[in-house]
Structures are given as C-alpha cells and as structure tokens.
Length: 345
Image 1: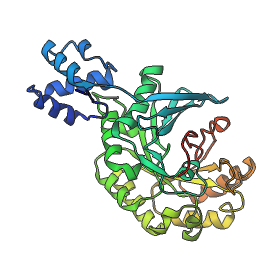
Image 2: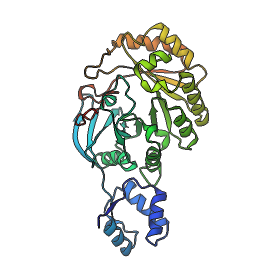
Image 3: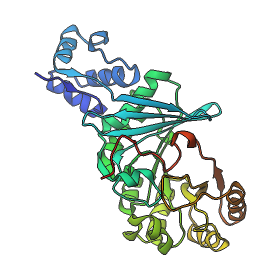
Image 4: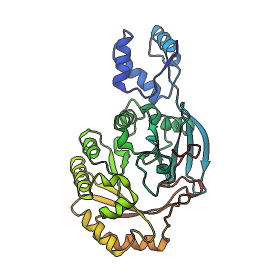
C-alpha cells in the first residue's frame, strides 16, 4: 500500500487523523509539532507517542518535503532556490538578507494566469496552484538547511497570485503561524496581490493577522490596464475601497507597490494621480525600479529618477520608501522569477 504524505496537513487535520486511528485528538497536536516545529519526519523518533501509534504511522504515512534542483547566490547575498515538484513543474523561492534579518519570498502557484506585461512569471502562463504542503515545503527546506533562525519575515511575492489559491494559502499560513508549527507570527507575513477585490475582503474577514501589499504600478485605470490585464475586472476606485476596508479591519497600513517604468508612469502627473488615489487610506508606498525581463518593451529608470520620484511623492503620501532591487544578477529580483525549466504555455 502506498503511504500518504502528511505534508501540508493542518492541526485540525492531524487531530482528525488521530480520531481515524482510534487515538485522542491531542495526539494530533503532538504529531503536528514534531513534523513542523521539531522538523522530525521519522515517526519512530516521536517519543511521546506510543510504540503502537508510531508503528501505524510508519506503515501508512510519510512526511516528505519538496526537493531543490538548483541554488543560485547573488553578489548581494540574495539566494534563489529552484524547486522541482512531483509532477515536473518548477517553482522559485528567494532568500533576501537585510542586515540581521532575512525575508523569504515564497511562491504560491506554478506559473501565473494574470499575464502582467512586465513579469517573467506571467510569460510562462498558469500551470497549477501549489498545495498547502508545497507552499510550506519551501520554508521547511530553508529551516532544515539554515536553522530555525534562517528567516524572520515571509512575503508571498514569488511566482503566482496568492489570492487565486486562497484555501491553500490560508492553510499554509495557519501552519506557519501556529505555535506548534513554524511559529512565525502572522504579523511577519505579507500577502501580495495584483488586486483581486473580492478576495481582499475575504482575507480581511478571515481573522488571519497578515499584512497586505497591493501591486498598483499605475494610478489611472487606462495605464493600469495597459500593463496589468486583471485590472479590466476591477476599477481602481473599487480596489481602493477594498484596501481601505482591509486597513480599517486590520488596524494596519496597507502597502502599495509601485514599479517605476521609464517614460510610462514616472511623471509629476502620475505623482499627483497617485496621491489623489490613496487619499484617506492608511498606507505606505514602496517605489522600486523596473527589473529588466528578457525582450519585454520596458526600460528601467535611472537611480536619480527613482529617488526624485520618491522625494516628490513623499509630501503627498503618508509614507514612501524606495526599495532597492536585490538579486538582479541571478534573476531573483521582483518580476524576474520564471523557473527557467518551465516552458511558456
């Protein structure tokens, strides 16, 4: 009989498993802690479980993570990991050191269906959603490789649109933030979206205390449609209403990501439109320069232009930061993740 992989099971699912095996539910919490917190995949080593239960688990179940195919390291210390999935798909995960803290950029889908014109993942097309186990598996691998303090923040800004994989995303966040699991506070987790309005409301109402980042990149509907086809479904005013709802519900600022493209969204008129758009929303704006992707018809602005844009925007917005591109030399920067072994669909 083929054994079942428990990777991705939540606390509640582990408790139900124990009931199925004729055990008390609290044994499921013990099992969950061994697998995700202690990083112990060998059931025989779980000394607070009975010998009979350990035998049953060993006969019927396994706990196996996802496997890395290639690792690349940038001159700036950024590390990109290419993972090979069981069905032949590939995903990429990025470790970004910033002083004493490290952020992990996690993928939620293999490929992406949204086709943003400037994004390498969008050129691939959509392959499939990741399971909760494949999402958490990226982090478990890093913990096993580099230890329990290997990262302090998680951003769902890797391959795919997280809110299109809502159930698996939230299950993964539950595992990550559980004290019995990876034990990383949800306040240290940021979910990034291109702006799926109904799902922003759902995330706000979910009870998960995660942060929200919205990939904005333009302050008018016409310009945003030109680079982000998904925006045809939601007007910017609808998106701003959802952002405002999330900020008030969570009592925390929303982050707007604004990629600067040379000659497209970098004028004083754009600054004025952006400041008018976000008026009254508790937020901060991250401005970053476009990172080149293959033969796409967009240009990266100069550092001077980037800094000038941020300087002019700040008095008109509550908080503005200039984000520096990391991992450019290994194609690990924002918008560059493509899993080069994948073929575009």
